[in-house]
Image (tube, rainbow, N blue to C red; front, top):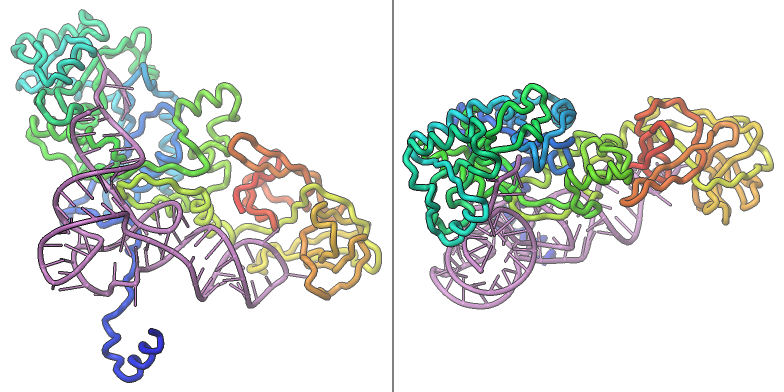
Length: 495
RNA sequence: GCUCGUAUAGUGUAGUGGCCCAUCAUAAAGGACUCUCAUUCCUUUGACCCGGGUUCAAAUCCCGGUACGAGCACCA
């Protein structure tokens, strides 16, 4: 084949033309945006805890599209549930910072659903007045039977007057939680059971379960459910594109039915599938919270946790996270990715800037014999002489090396060739013996290498060469991997 | 059970009827460079879920099957 090609290229090159290799599209898929329009995106988490790794996808994809199209990114807190997934007050402060860290710029606008209850009430009332919503007094179980039987519940045929009356009873506390709910009239014979007369607003016991925001507290008893709140708010904020998980596909269908009632047009919607990281099983905010409270993890910033804070502790760069999510794209496939993919993005960013250090695990002392210099200079970074040198003192001529390296002849990196007993054999590199990292007794201190494994933080004691890098500095421990300096040792990031 | 969605190398991803014996990344293996098992560079390995159909032509369109995932909450 190659032979034929070479003949062709010399005899009839034109036949090979037009056979250019196909190229891979860069970045995110093209978005449908009308000419001259400024698209509006939103990222809408429940502030019931800090952001997780998975949330980062929503931030990065929406934020990147917004930046590419000179559009707007709204950060919206969908904090309408005080019982099942109650918001956490600190998350209101934290999440905007995490978004800013991830994107390198803050969200353009922040909206709190709990501040906008009056808007949702207005739309609920309009729904009742126009007859496409009704106050349903069936229990959840009773309604489930109607839904399964594709039959109308009796409340469906109430007059506007009766519905308004029911609505007032919801507002004034006559109805207690569980007594009534506002439903959107769709069609009980719809093929998809999820869409049949879905609930839009319900009652919550905010006296016993007040909203955690002091300014909201027990003010409202009637609260919108996500599908209703989100649909109305998207409209009010002028959202043009919704990009979210495909688990919300039925939500889109419900909301589209509501939009049709109101005479609105639903935003362009794009979905992504489920992502699992090999090394992390399924962490949910609630299971993480439980493990933190029981002391399994030190906090939301534990380096073993798949939270934004955990990634920060672990030295993962925001840019690496962005590149990672953009590379995964927005396909609807359910995927499982290894952490190595994220680490390779991180390595690309940190390697050029990470000073080199020697760390010796499980150290053994070797007393050098023979001619030894008083001190040695090593470059801080092999590719960047401008980063300067580190000077190692060899008075006395005692070095520490890893026990595992001490079995054979070896070369102390950038220093001397040594035999098993510490006799210096050559200053220059004389043969192919292994090159190992080392520290000198006087220019090193005891330290700990902390390795974040799934279940434990493995602590390996050793010695690190003396340095004065501040906490938070990312270094490369030669022959070990990249690590970040913490208050109590060197946290291994990845190889 | 009902409804919806997805299926390309080990893992991700490009590809919307002919430039496809299929792109790129990552992983693995080998090599070059390097006084790190790092970085950089080179090479190799490796895929269109199965079965029909439409067409001159299918990874791409249609039908069926299978697998996986999601929704059917007075959670988000």
